[in-house]
Length: 131
Image (tube, rainbow, N blue to C red; front, top):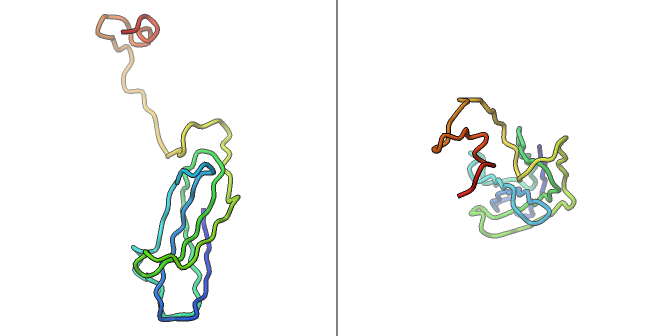
């Protein structure tokens, strides 16, 4: 996943940070990242800039997402400009997935044949009785 963002300024002495946010269509924020931790930021001394946010793995499970781009001052407090890409993008998995993200994961079978407290095997305990 990548977002390219370009902007110009009339005053090259101003300093800027860029933030990209990804929200699901219902307003739930999936994530946001900005340039504040970058060694080359804040951006200052030129009249135009182009930056790219690259996310090598995007574990979003499914859904429609909006892309928000924010241009802020050097403290990331004052908003100079904002753009919203809506519709942004859609994630469609081959199988239905529950939740917002699908992180890389592995399962392993650690043990079988476990007994519940009353001697009923765990596989049968869930339907045998409730407490």
